[in-house]
Image (cartoon, rainbow, N blue to C red):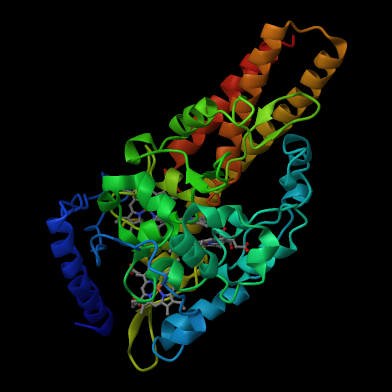
Length: 431
Ligand code: HEC
Ligand code: HEC
Ligand code: HEC
Ligand code: HEC
Protein backbone atom coordinates (compact mmCIF):
# COMPACT_ATOMS: atom_id res chain seq x y z
CA UNK A 1 0.00 0.00 0.00
CA UNK A 2 1.52 3.31 -1.00
CA UNK A 3 1.12 6.57 0.88
CA UNK A 4 -1.62 7.72 -1.39
CA UNK A 5 -3.82 4.77 -0.53
CA UNK A 6 -3.05 5.32 3.15
CA UNK A 7 -4.42 8.78 2.74
CA UNK A 8 -7.51 7.30 1.22
CA UNK A 9 -8.10 5.01 4.13
CA UNK A 10 -7.68 8.02 6.37
CA UNK A 11 -10.24 9.91 4.35
CA UNK A 12 -12.61 6.95 4.40
CA UNK A 13 -12.10 6.67 8.15
CA UNK A 14 -13.38 10.17 8.56
CA UNK A 15 -16.15 9.39 6.17
CA UNK A 16 -17.11 6.47 8.37
CA UNK A 17 -17.99 8.91 11.12
CA UNK A 18 -20.07 10.90 8.70
CA UNK A 19 -22.03 7.83 7.63
CA UNK A 20 -22.92 7.01 11.19
CA UNK A 21 -24.13 10.55 11.73
CA UNK A 22 -25.87 10.48 8.37
CA UNK A 23 -27.60 7.20 9.19
CA UNK A 24 -28.94 8.65 12.40
CA UNK A 25 -30.48 11.52 10.51
CA UNK A 26 -31.81 9.22 7.80
CA UNK A 27 -29.19 10.25 5.25
CA UNK A 28 -26.94 7.25 5.23
CA UNK A 29 -27.83 5.71 1.87
CA UNK A 30 -24.82 4.47 -0.08
CA UNK A 31 -24.01 6.08 -3.40
CA UNK A 32 -24.87 4.13 -6.52
CA UNK A 33 -22.07 1.68 -7.26
CA UNK A 34 -19.86 2.93 -10.08
CA UNK A 35 -20.82 1.10 -13.24
CA UNK A 36 -18.34 -0.11 -15.79
CA UNK A 37 -17.97 1.74 -19.06
CA UNK A 38 -20.13 0.60 -21.94
CA UNK A 39 -18.43 -1.11 -24.85
CA UNK A 40 -15.91 1.30 -26.34
CA UNK A 41 -14.42 1.31 -29.81
CA UNK A 42 -11.37 0.43 -27.77
CA UNK A 43 -11.58 -2.46 -25.33
CA UNK A 44 -12.21 -0.96 -21.92
CA UNK A 45 -10.17 -2.11 -18.97
CA UNK A 46 -11.64 -2.30 -15.49
CA UNK A 47 -12.90 1.07 -14.38
CA UNK A 48 -10.34 2.48 -11.95
CA UNK A 49 -11.31 2.58 -8.30
CA UNK A 50 -12.41 6.17 -7.93
CA UNK A 51 -14.45 6.42 -4.75
CA UNK A 52 -12.05 7.34 -1.99
CA UNK A 53 -14.43 9.32 0.12
CA UNK A 54 -17.89 8.06 -0.71
CA UNK A 55 -19.97 11.12 0.07
CA UNK A 56 -18.98 14.77 0.27
CA UNK A 57 -19.56 16.37 3.66
CA UNK A 58 -21.74 19.45 3.70
CA UNK A 59 -20.28 22.44 5.56
CA UNK A 60 -22.51 23.66 8.37
CA UNK A 61 -23.91 27.16 8.20
CA UNK A 62 -23.93 29.84 10.89
CA UNK A 63 -21.01 28.46 12.89
CA UNK A 64 -18.76 31.54 12.67
CA UNK A 65 -16.06 29.45 10.97
CA UNK A 66 -12.79 31.25 10.15
CA UNK A 67 -10.85 30.49 6.98
CA UNK A 68 -7.46 28.84 7.22
CA UNK A 69 -5.57 30.31 4.28
CA UNK A 70 -3.88 28.17 1.64
CA UNK A 71 -0.45 29.29 2.83
CA UNK A 72 -1.32 28.09 6.38
CA UNK A 73 -1.14 24.51 5.05
CA UNK A 74 2.15 24.88 3.15
CA UNK A 75 4.21 23.04 5.75
CA UNK A 76 1.80 20.27 6.58
CA UNK A 77 0.88 19.47 2.96
CA UNK A 78 3.92 20.60 0.96
CA UNK A 79 3.15 18.67 -2.23
CA UNK A 80 -0.47 19.75 -2.48
CA UNK A 81 0.52 23.34 -1.66
CA UNK A 82 3.45 23.47 -4.09
CA UNK A 83 1.37 22.09 -6.94
CA UNK A 84 -1.44 24.48 -6.02
CA UNK A 85 1.06 27.35 -6.43
CA UNK A 86 1.98 25.98 -9.88
CA UNK A 87 -1.41 27.25 -11.11
CA UNK A 88 0.44 30.55 -11.41
CA UNK A 89 2.17 29.05 -14.46
CA UNK A 90 -1.18 28.78 -16.24
CA UNK A 91 -1.27 32.51 -16.87
CA UNK A 92 -2.09 32.77 -20.53
CA UNK A 93 -5.27 34.55 -21.40
CA UNK A 94 -6.80 35.14 -24.79
CA UNK A 95 -9.48 37.55 -25.84
CA UNK A 96 -12.78 35.89 -26.76
CA UNK A 97 -14.15 39.08 -28.31
CA UNK A 98 -11.21 39.36 -30.68
CA UNK A 99 -11.50 35.68 -31.63
CA UNK A 100 -15.29 35.66 -32.00
CA UNK A 101 -16.29 39.18 -33.07
CA UNK A 102 -20.00 38.27 -33.28
CA UNK A 103 -20.25 38.06 -29.48
CA UNK A 104 -20.07 41.86 -29.31
CA UNK A 105 -23.55 41.85 -30.86
CA UNK A 106 -24.87 38.77 -29.04
CA UNK A 107 -23.85 40.09 -25.59
CA UNK A 108 -24.44 43.77 -26.37
CA UNK A 109 -25.71 45.61 -23.29
CA UNK A 110 -24.04 43.11 -20.95
CA UNK A 111 -20.56 43.16 -19.43
CA UNK A 112 -19.25 40.30 -21.55
CA UNK A 113 -19.51 42.45 -24.69
CA UNK A 114 -16.95 44.81 -23.13
CA UNK A 115 -14.46 42.34 -21.71
CA UNK A 116 -14.31 38.54 -22.03
CA UNK A 117 -10.97 36.80 -21.50
CA UNK A 118 -10.49 33.04 -21.52
CA UNK A 119 -10.05 31.15 -18.25
CA UNK A 120 -6.62 30.58 -16.69
CA UNK A 121 -5.17 29.17 -13.46
CA UNK A 122 -7.17 29.13 -10.22
CA UNK A 123 -4.71 31.37 -8.39
CA UNK A 124 -5.65 34.26 -10.73
CA UNK A 125 -9.35 34.32 -9.95
CA UNK A 126 -9.42 37.36 -7.67
CA UNK A 127 -7.07 39.36 -9.87
CA UNK A 128 -9.21 38.50 -12.90
CA UNK A 129 -12.52 39.46 -11.32
CA UNK A 130 -11.28 42.77 -9.91
CA UNK A 131 -9.41 43.83 -13.05
CA UNK A 132 -12.05 42.89 -15.62
CA UNK A 133 -13.39 45.76 -17.67
CA UNK A 134 -16.90 44.45 -16.93
CA UNK A 135 -18.97 46.52 -14.54
CA UNK A 136 -19.62 44.69 -11.29
CA UNK A 137 -21.64 45.93 -8.42
CA UNK A 138 -22.22 43.22 -5.86
CA UNK A 139 -20.18 40.85 -3.74
CA UNK A 140 -21.98 37.89 -5.35
CA UNK A 141 -19.26 38.13 -8.06
CA UNK A 142 -16.87 36.70 -5.45
CA UNK A 143 -18.88 33.47 -5.10
CA UNK A 144 -16.36 31.44 -7.09
CA UNK A 145 -13.26 33.48 -6.39
CA UNK A 146 -12.31 33.57 -2.75
CA UNK A 147 -12.86 31.40 0.28
CA UNK A 148 -13.22 34.53 2.42
CA UNK A 149 -16.52 35.12 0.66
CA UNK A 150 -17.47 31.44 0.85
CA UNK A 151 -17.02 31.59 4.63
CA UNK A 152 -19.00 34.83 4.80
CA UNK A 153 -21.96 33.20 3.05
CA UNK A 154 -21.74 30.20 5.39
CA UNK A 155 -21.68 32.51 8.41
CA UNK A 156 -24.07 35.31 7.38
CA UNK A 157 -26.40 33.57 4.92
CA UNK A 158 -27.89 35.10 1.75
CA UNK A 159 -27.45 38.70 2.93
CA UNK A 160 -23.72 38.41 2.05
CA UNK A 161 -24.50 38.18 -1.68
CA UNK A 162 -26.05 41.66 -1.79
CA UNK A 163 -23.07 43.42 -0.17
CA UNK A 164 -21.26 46.01 -2.28
CA UNK A 165 -18.40 44.51 -4.32
CA UNK A 166 -15.91 47.02 -2.87
CA UNK A 167 -16.89 46.21 0.73
CA UNK A 168 -16.01 42.57 0.13
CA UNK A 169 -12.93 43.29 -1.97
CA UNK A 170 -11.08 44.80 1.02
CA UNK A 171 -11.77 41.68 3.10
CA UNK A 172 -10.16 39.23 0.66
CA UNK A 173 -7.10 37.47 2.10
CA UNK A 174 -7.13 34.14 0.25
CA UNK A 175 -7.75 33.89 -3.49
CA UNK A 176 -9.16 30.48 -4.36
CA UNK A 177 -8.34 28.66 -1.14
CA UNK A 178 -8.16 25.07 0.05
CA UNK A 179 -11.27 25.99 2.05
CA UNK A 180 -13.56 25.84 -1.02
CA UNK A 181 -13.12 22.09 -1.31
CA UNK A 182 -11.82 20.99 2.09
CA UNK A 183 -13.19 23.48 4.61
CA UNK A 184 -10.41 23.50 7.25
CA UNK A 185 -9.63 19.77 6.83
CA UNK A 186 -7.37 19.32 3.78
CA UNK A 187 -7.97 16.00 2.08
CA UNK A 188 -11.61 15.68 3.17
CA UNK A 189 -14.06 16.92 0.54
CA UNK A 190 -16.60 19.41 1.85
CA UNK A 191 -19.33 21.22 -0.04
CA UNK A 192 -18.91 24.78 1.20
CA UNK A 193 -21.12 26.46 -1.42
CA UNK A 194 -24.68 25.95 -0.12
CA UNK A 195 -26.46 26.28 -3.47
CA UNK A 196 -24.83 23.00 -4.57
CA UNK A 197 -25.99 20.99 -1.57
CA UNK A 198 -29.41 22.71 -1.52
CA UNK A 199 -30.07 22.04 -5.17
CA UNK A 200 -28.79 18.50 -5.42
CA UNK A 201 -30.42 17.41 -2.16
CA UNK A 202 -30.43 13.64 -1.79
CA UNK A 203 -28.66 13.29 -5.15
CA UNK A 204 -25.45 14.58 -3.54
CA UNK A 205 -24.73 10.99 -2.60
CA UNK A 206 -24.91 9.88 -6.24
CA UNK A 207 -22.04 12.12 -7.35
CA UNK A 208 -18.35 11.48 -6.68
CA UNK A 209 -17.13 13.98 -4.04
CA UNK A 210 -14.21 15.03 -6.26
CA UNK A 211 -16.69 15.96 -9.01
CA UNK A 212 -18.84 17.85 -6.52
CA UNK A 213 -15.83 19.87 -5.40
CA UNK A 214 -15.60 21.28 -8.95
CA UNK A 215 -19.39 21.59 -9.32
CA UNK A 216 -19.28 24.36 -6.74
CA UNK A 217 -18.03 26.73 -9.43
CA UNK A 218 -17.95 24.99 -12.80
CA UNK A 219 -21.71 25.20 -12.93
CA UNK A 220 -24.44 27.21 -14.67
CA UNK A 221 -25.74 29.73 -12.11
CA UNK A 222 -27.91 32.80 -11.96
CA UNK A 223 -28.41 35.55 -9.36
CA UNK A 224 -31.82 35.47 -7.71
CA UNK A 225 -33.63 38.62 -8.87
CA UNK A 226 -34.87 39.41 -5.35
CA UNK A 227 -32.05 38.40 -2.97
CA UNK A 228 -29.09 38.54 -5.44
CA UNK A 229 -28.04 35.15 -4.08
CA UNK A 230 -26.13 32.77 -6.32
CA UNK A 231 -28.52 30.03 -7.42
CA UNK A 232 -28.53 26.95 -9.63
CA UNK A 233 -31.50 26.51 -11.94
CA UNK A 234 -32.42 22.90 -11.17
CA UNK A 235 -33.22 20.60 -8.29
CA UNK A 236 -31.67 17.16 -8.39
CA UNK A 237 -29.93 15.31 -11.19
CA UNK A 238 -33.19 14.51 -13.00
CA UNK A 239 -33.49 18.21 -13.94
CA UNK A 240 -29.90 18.82 -14.89
CA UNK A 241 -30.51 19.19 -18.64
CA UNK A 242 -30.14 22.50 -20.52
CA UNK A 243 -33.82 22.27 -21.50
CA UNK A 244 -35.00 21.91 -17.91
CA UNK A 245 -32.80 24.86 -16.84
CA UNK A 246 -34.12 27.00 -19.68
CA UNK A 247 -37.73 26.14 -18.84
CA UNK A 248 -37.04 27.04 -15.22
CA UNK A 249 -35.42 30.38 -16.08
CA UNK A 250 -38.24 31.13 -18.54
CA UNK A 251 -40.74 30.60 -15.71
CA UNK A 252 -39.02 33.06 -13.32
CA UNK A 253 -40.52 36.53 -13.01
CA UNK A 254 -38.59 39.62 -11.89
CA UNK A 255 -39.73 42.40 -9.53
CA UNK A 256 -41.49 44.24 -12.39
CA UNK A 257 -43.46 41.15 -13.41
CA UNK A 258 -41.35 40.50 -16.52
CA UNK A 259 -39.81 37.21 -17.60
CA UNK A 260 -36.43 36.91 -15.83
CA UNK A 261 -33.49 38.18 -17.89
CA UNK A 262 -29.81 38.72 -17.25
CA UNK A 263 -30.16 41.80 -19.47
CA UNK A 264 -32.44 43.18 -22.16
CA UNK A 265 -31.05 43.90 -25.62
CA UNK A 266 -31.78 47.57 -26.34
CA UNK A 267 -32.14 47.21 -30.13
CA UNK A 268 -34.39 44.16 -30.21
CA UNK A 269 -36.04 44.01 -26.77
CA UNK A 270 -34.96 40.38 -26.48
CA UNK A 271 -34.78 39.40 -22.80
CA UNK A 272 -31.45 37.59 -22.91
CA UNK A 273 -29.89 34.97 -20.67
CA UNK A 274 -26.18 34.37 -20.11
CA UNK A 275 -25.05 30.81 -19.61
CA UNK A 276 -21.95 30.37 -17.43
CA UNK A 277 -19.43 27.53 -17.73
CA UNK A 278 -21.81 24.52 -17.38
CA UNK A 279 -19.01 21.93 -17.07
CA UNK A 280 -20.74 20.02 -14.28
CA UNK A 281 -24.12 19.92 -16.05
CA UNK A 282 -22.55 18.92 -19.36
CA UNK A 283 -20.41 16.24 -17.77
CA UNK A 284 -23.27 14.77 -15.71
CA UNK A 285 -25.85 15.24 -18.46
CA UNK A 286 -27.45 12.68 -20.73
CA UNK A 287 -24.99 11.23 -23.23
CA UNK A 288 -21.89 11.55 -21.03
CA UNK A 289 -19.78 8.44 -21.50
CA UNK A 290 -17.49 8.88 -18.48
CA UNK A 291 -19.69 10.31 -15.73
CA UNK A 292 -20.56 7.00 -14.11
CA UNK A 293 -16.96 5.89 -13.59
CA UNK A 294 -14.58 8.88 -13.65
CA UNK A 295 -14.50 12.07 -11.56
CA UNK A 296 -13.34 15.50 -12.75
CA UNK A 297 -10.19 14.97 -10.68
CA UNK A 298 -9.37 11.73 -12.52
CA UNK A 299 -8.83 13.72 -15.71
CA UNK A 300 -7.69 17.08 -14.31
CA UNK A 301 -5.66 16.33 -11.15
CA UNK A 302 -2.82 13.92 -11.93
CA UNK A 303 -1.40 11.52 -9.37
CA UNK A 304 2.29 12.27 -8.83
CA UNK A 305 5.18 10.72 -6.90
CA UNK A 306 7.52 13.06 -5.02
CA UNK A 307 11.27 12.50 -4.85
CA UNK A 308 10.89 10.97 -1.39
CA UNK A 309 8.37 8.47 -2.79
CA UNK A 310 5.22 10.16 -1.44
CA UNK A 311 2.30 9.64 -3.78
CA UNK A 312 -0.07 12.62 -3.85
CA UNK A 313 -2.68 14.33 -5.99
CA UNK A 314 -1.41 17.29 -7.93
CA UNK A 315 -3.41 20.45 -7.28
CA UNK A 316 -2.36 22.05 -10.51
CA UNK A 317 -5.59 21.82 -12.44
CA UNK A 318 -4.75 21.22 -16.08
CA UNK A 319 -6.09 19.94 -19.36
CA UNK A 320 -5.47 16.18 -19.57
CA UNK A 321 -3.67 16.86 -22.84
CA UNK A 322 -1.05 18.91 -20.99
CA UNK A 323 0.03 16.29 -18.50
CA UNK A 324 1.73 13.00 -19.52
CA UNK A 325 0.44 11.15 -16.43
CA UNK A 326 -3.14 12.13 -17.22
CA UNK A 327 -2.72 11.12 -20.85
CA UNK A 328 -1.32 7.78 -19.73
CA UNK A 329 -4.38 7.23 -17.58
CA UNK A 330 -6.59 7.47 -20.68
CA UNK A 331 -4.70 4.54 -22.16
CA UNK A 332 -6.37 2.19 -19.68
CA UNK A 333 -9.39 2.37 -21.97
CA UNK A 334 -8.36 4.26 -25.10
CA UNK A 335 -5.90 3.00 -27.69
CA UNK A 336 -6.14 5.97 -30.03
CA UNK A 337 -4.13 9.21 -29.93
CA UNK A 338 -6.15 11.19 -27.39
CA UNK A 339 -4.94 14.63 -28.41
CA UNK A 340 -6.13 13.88 -31.91
CA UNK A 341 -9.46 12.48 -30.72
CA UNK A 342 -10.11 15.53 -28.54
CA UNK A 343 -9.00 18.07 -31.15
CA UNK A 344 -11.24 16.50 -33.78
CA UNK A 345 -14.27 16.88 -31.51
CA UNK A 346 -13.29 20.45 -30.62
CA UNK A 347 -12.77 21.51 -34.24
CA UNK A 348 -16.18 20.20 -35.22
CA UNK A 349 -17.76 21.93 -32.22
CA UNK A 350 -16.06 25.27 -32.94
CA UNK A 351 -17.09 25.19 -36.58
CA UNK A 352 -20.76 24.77 -35.62
CA UNK A 353 -20.46 27.35 -32.80
CA UNK A 354 -19.07 29.95 -35.21
CA UNK A 355 -21.59 29.28 -37.93
CA UNK A 356 -24.44 29.63 -35.44
CA UNK A 357 -22.80 32.64 -33.77
CA UNK A 358 -22.72 34.61 -37.02
CA UNK A 359 -26.29 33.50 -37.87
CA UNK A 360 -27.51 34.67 -34.44
CA UNK A 361 -25.77 38.00 -34.98
CA UNK A 362 -27.60 38.34 -38.30
CA UNK A 363 -30.89 37.50 -36.55
CA UNK A 364 -30.29 40.32 -34.04
CA UNK A 365 -29.68 42.76 -36.88
CA UNK A 366 -32.69 41.60 -38.93
CA UNK A 367 -34.95 41.79 -35.90
CA UNK A 368 -33.75 45.33 -35.07
CA UNK A 369 -34.48 46.37 -38.68
CA UNK A 370 -37.93 44.76 -38.61
CA UNK A 371 -38.72 46.60 -35.38
CA UNK A 372 -37.60 49.89 -36.92
CA UNK A 373 -39.71 49.21 -40.01
CA UNK A 374 -42.70 48.26 -37.84
CA UNK A 375 -43.50 45.20 -39.96
CA UNK A 376 -44.18 42.71 -37.14
CA UNK A 377 -47.43 42.32 -35.22
CA UNK A 378 -47.06 42.47 -31.43
CA UNK A 379 -47.76 38.78 -31.23
CA UNK A 380 -45.14 37.86 -33.84
CA UNK A 381 -42.64 40.19 -32.22
CA UNK A 382 -43.03 38.39 -28.90
CA UNK A 383 -42.67 35.01 -30.66
CA UNK A 384 -39.42 36.07 -32.40
CA UNK A 385 -38.03 37.48 -29.17
CA UNK A 386 -38.67 34.25 -27.29
CA UNK A 387 -37.25 32.08 -30.10
CA UNK A 388 -34.16 34.30 -30.24
CA UNK A 389 -33.66 34.11 -26.45
CA UNK A 390 -33.94 30.32 -26.56
CA UNK A 391 -31.63 29.96 -29.60
CA UNK A 392 -28.93 32.05 -27.91
CA UNK A 393 -29.30 30.03 -24.68
CA UNK A 394 -28.55 26.72 -26.42
CA UNK A 395 -25.70 28.20 -28.43
CA UNK A 396 -24.18 29.80 -25.30
CA UNK A 397 -24.49 26.53 -23.37
CA UNK A 398 -21.86 25.15 -25.75
CA UNK A 399 -19.88 28.35 -26.38
CA UNK A 400 -19.02 28.86 -22.69
CA UNK A 401 -18.49 25.19 -21.81
CA UNK A 402 -14.73 24.96 -21.46
CA UNK A 403 -14.13 21.54 -23.04
CA UNK A 404 -15.60 22.55 -26.42
CA UNK A 405 -17.49 19.32 -26.88
CA UNK A 406 -14.99 16.90 -25.31
CA UNK A 407 -16.96 16.38 -22.06
CA UNK A 408 -20.10 15.18 -23.81
CA UNK A 409 -20.23 15.23 -27.57
CA UNK A 410 -23.81 14.02 -27.77
CA UNK A 411 -25.26 16.70 -25.50
CA UNK A 412 -23.11 19.36 -27.18
CA UNK A 413 -24.54 18.51 -30.58
CA UNK A 414 -28.08 18.30 -29.22
CA UNK A 415 -27.71 21.86 -27.88
CA UNK A 416 -26.42 23.12 -31.20
CA UNK A 417 -29.31 21.37 -33.02
CA UNK A 418 -31.80 23.08 -30.71
CA UNK A 419 -30.10 26.45 -31.23
CA UNK A 420 -30.52 25.93 -34.97
CA UNK A 421 -34.20 24.97 -34.56
CA UNK A 422 -35.03 28.11 -32.57
CA UNK A 423 -32.99 30.23 -34.96
CA UNK A 424 -35.01 28.85 -37.90
CA UNK A 425 -38.23 29.52 -36.01
CA UNK A 426 -37.23 33.14 -35.32
CA UNK A 427 -36.16 33.68 -38.92
CA UNK A 428 -39.45 32.30 -40.23
CA UNK A 429 -41.16 35.46 -38.92
CA UNK A 430 -38.66 37.72 -40.63
CA UNK A 431 -38.81 36.41 -44.19
C1 HEC B 1 -14.13 28.28 -6.09
C2 HEC B 1 -14.48 28.11 -7.47
C3 HEC B 1 -13.86 26.98 -8.28
C4 HEC B 1 -13.74 25.64 -7.94
C5 HEC B 1 -14.20 24.97 -6.66
C6 HEC B 1 -13.10 24.99 -9.05
N1 HEC B 1 -12.83 25.91 -10.04
FE1 HEC B 1 -11.79 25.59 -11.74
N2 HEC B 1 -11.88 27.57 -12.19
C7 HEC B 1 -12.60 28.52 -11.49
C8 HEC B 1 -12.45 29.82 -12.13
C9 HEC B 1 -13.14 31.11 -11.68
C10 HEC B 1 -11.58 29.63 -13.22
C11 HEC B 1 -11.07 30.70 -14.19
C12 HEC B 1 -9.92 31.41 -13.54
C13 HEC B 1 -9.47 32.69 -14.24
O1 HEC B 1 -9.44 32.72 -15.46
O2 HEC B 1 -9.14 33.67 -13.51
C14 HEC B 1 -11.21 28.20 -13.22
C15 HEC B 1 -10.33 27.60 -14.12
C16 HEC B 1 -10.08 26.22 -14.19
C17 HEC B 1 -9.18 25.58 -15.12
C18 HEC B 1 -8.26 26.29 -16.09
C19 HEC B 1 -8.93 26.59 -17.35
C20 HEC B 1 -8.02 27.16 -18.41
O3 HEC B 1 -8.58 27.49 -19.46
O4 HEC B 1 -6.80 27.24 -18.22
C21 HEC B 1 -9.30 24.22 -14.93
C22 HEC B 1 -8.59 23.11 -15.71
C23 HEC B 1 -10.23 24.03 -13.85
N3 HEC B 1 -10.67 25.26 -13.40
C24 HEC B 1 -10.62 22.78 -13.37
C25 HEC B 1 -11.25 22.60 -12.14
C26 HEC B 1 -11.46 21.31 -11.52
C27 HEC B 1 -11.11 19.97 -12.13
C28 HEC B 1 -12.06 21.55 -10.31
C29 HEC B 1 -12.44 20.55 -9.25
C30 HEC B 1 -11.40 19.65 -8.77
C31 HEC B 1 -12.24 22.99 -10.19
N4 HEC B 1 -11.73 23.58 -11.31
C32 HEC B 1 -12.82 23.64 -9.11
C33 HEC B 1 -13.31 28.31 -10.34
C34 HEC B 1 -13.32 27.12 -9.62
C1 HEC C 1 -11.05 22.61 -6.22
C2 HEC C 1 -11.04 21.74 -5.09
C3 HEC C 1 -9.80 21.61 -4.27
C4 HEC C 1 -9.05 22.60 -3.70
C5 HEC C 1 -9.24 24.10 -3.79
C6 HEC C 1 -8.02 21.94 -2.95
N1 HEC C 1 -8.16 20.58 -3.07
FE1 HEC C 1 -7.10 19.18 -2.06
N2 HEC C 1 -8.11 17.71 -3.03
C7 HEC C 1 -9.13 17.91 -3.94
C8 HEC C 1 -9.56 16.64 -4.47
C9 HEC C 1 -10.66 16.44 -5.49
C10 HEC C 1 -8.78 15.65 -3.83
C11 HEC C 1 -8.86 14.16 -3.99
C12 HEC C 1 -8.26 13.77 -5.27
C13 HEC C 1 -8.74 12.42 -5.72
O1 HEC C 1 -9.95 12.20 -5.63
O2 HEC C 1 -7.90 11.65 -6.15
C14 HEC C 1 -7.89 16.36 -2.92
C15 HEC C 1 -6.98 15.74 -2.07
C16 HEC C 1 -6.22 16.40 -1.12
C17 HEC C 1 -5.41 15.75 -0.11
C18 HEC C 1 -5.32 14.23 0.11
C19 HEC C 1 -3.96 13.72 -0.34
C20 HEC C 1 -3.78 13.73 -1.84
O3 HEC C 1 -2.86 14.44 -2.30
O4 HEC C 1 -4.56 13.08 -2.56
C21 HEC C 1 -4.80 16.75 0.60
C22 HEC C 1 -3.89 16.59 1.79
C23 HEC C 1 -5.22 18.01 0.04
N3 HEC C 1 -6.09 17.77 -1.00
C24 HEC C 1 -4.76 19.26 0.45
C25 HEC C 1 -5.12 20.46 -0.13
C26 HEC C 1 -4.52 21.75 0.20
C27 HEC C 1 -3.45 21.96 1.24
C28 HEC C 1 -5.15 22.68 -0.57
C29 HEC C 1 -4.86 24.18 -0.68
C30 HEC C 1 -3.48 24.54 -0.91
C31 HEC C 1 -6.14 21.98 -1.37
N4 HEC C 1 -6.07 20.64 -1.10
C32 HEC C 1 -7.03 22.62 -2.25
C33 HEC C 1 -9.69 19.11 -4.28
C34 HEC C 1 -9.23 20.35 -3.88
C1 HEC D 1 -12.60 11.79 -19.25
C2 HEC D 1 -11.80 12.91 -18.86
C3 HEC D 1 -12.46 14.17 -18.35
C4 HEC D 1 -13.28 14.30 -17.25
C5 HEC D 1 -13.78 13.22 -16.33
C6 HEC D 1 -13.54 15.71 -17.12
N1 HEC D 1 -12.88 16.40 -18.10
FE1 HEC D 1 -12.70 18.42 -18.22
N2 HEC D 1 -11.73 18.21 -19.98
C7 HEC D 1 -11.38 17.01 -20.58
C8 HEC D 1 -10.80 17.27 -21.88
C9 HEC D 1 -10.31 16.21 -22.86
C10 HEC D 1 -10.80 18.68 -22.06
C11 HEC D 1 -10.27 19.50 -23.24
C12 HEC D 1 -8.84 19.81 -22.98
C13 HEC D 1 -8.18 20.72 -23.95
O1 HEC D 1 -8.83 21.44 -24.70
O2 HEC D 1 -6.92 20.75 -23.92
C14 HEC D 1 -11.36 19.23 -20.82
C15 HEC D 1 -11.44 20.59 -20.56
C16 HEC D 1 -11.85 21.13 -19.33
C17 HEC D 1 -11.70 22.52 -18.95
C18 HEC D 1 -10.98 23.59 -19.77
C19 HEC D 1 -9.51 23.39 -19.52
C20 HEC D 1 -8.59 24.13 -20.44
O3 HEC D 1 -7.36 24.08 -20.17
O4 HEC D 1 -9.04 24.73 -21.41
C21 HEC D 1 -12.26 22.65 -17.70
C22 HEC D 1 -12.35 23.91 -16.89
C23 HEC D 1 -12.76 21.34 -17.32
N3 HEC D 1 -12.47 20.44 -18.33
C24 HEC D 1 -13.42 21.07 -16.15
C25 HEC D 1 -13.96 19.81 -15.84
C26 HEC D 1 -14.88 19.57 -14.76
C27 HEC D 1 -15.36 20.61 -13.78
C28 HEC D 1 -15.19 18.23 -14.79
C29 HEC D 1 -16.16 17.48 -13.94
C30 HEC D 1 -17.52 18.01 -13.87
C31 HEC D 1 -14.41 17.63 -15.87
N4 HEC D 1 -13.72 18.63 -16.50
C32 HEC D 1 -14.37 16.26 -16.17
C33 HEC D 1 -11.51 15.75 -20.02
C34 HEC D 1 -12.23 15.48 -18.89
C1 HEC E 1 -12.28 3.65 -17.62
C2 HEC E 1 -12.28 3.80 -19.05
C3 HEC E 1 -11.97 5.17 -19.62
C4 HEC E 1 -10.95 6.03 -19.27
C5 HEC E 1 -9.88 5.86 -18.19
C6 HEC E 1 -11.03 7.15 -20.15
N1 HEC E 1 -12.09 6.99 -21.02
FE1 HEC E 1 -12.64 8.27 -22.49
N2 HEC E 1 -14.15 7.01 -23.06
C7 HEC E 1 -14.40 5.78 -22.50
C8 HEC E 1 -15.51 5.16 -23.21
C9 HEC E 1 -16.11 3.80 -22.91
C10 HEC E 1 -15.90 6.07 -24.23
C11 HEC E 1 -17.00 5.89 -25.29
C12 HEC E 1 -16.46 5.21 -26.54
C13 HEC E 1 -15.42 6.01 -27.28
O1 HEC E 1 -15.72 7.13 -27.76
O2 HEC E 1 -14.27 5.56 -27.35
C14 HEC E 1 -15.02 7.21 -24.11
C15 HEC E 1 -15.10 8.36 -24.90
C16 HEC E 1 -14.26 9.45 -24.81
C17 HEC E 1 -14.39 10.67 -25.60
C18 HEC E 1 -15.52 10.98 -26.56
C19 HEC E 1 -16.57 11.70 -25.71
C20 HEC E 1 -17.96 11.73 -26.22
O3 HEC E 1 -18.82 12.36 -25.54
O4 HEC E 1 -18.25 11.14 -27.27
C21 HEC E 1 -13.38 11.51 -25.21
C22 HEC E 1 -13.10 12.92 -25.73
C23 HEC E 1 -12.61 10.82 -24.21
N3 HEC E 1 -13.18 9.58 -23.99
C24 HEC E 1 -11.52 11.36 -23.58
C25 HEC E 1 -10.81 10.72 -22.55
C26 HEC E 1 -9.61 11.26 -21.96
C27 HEC E 1 -8.93 12.56 -22.39
C28 HEC E 1 -9.21 10.37 -21.01
C29 HEC E 1 -8.02 10.46 -20.09
C30 HEC E 1 -7.76 11.74 -19.41
C31 HEC E 1 -10.19 9.29 -20.99
N4 HEC E 1 -11.13 9.53 -21.94
C32 HEC E 1 -10.16 8.22 -20.12
C33 HEC E 1 -13.74 5.21 -21.43
C34 HEC E 1 -12.67 5.77 -20.75
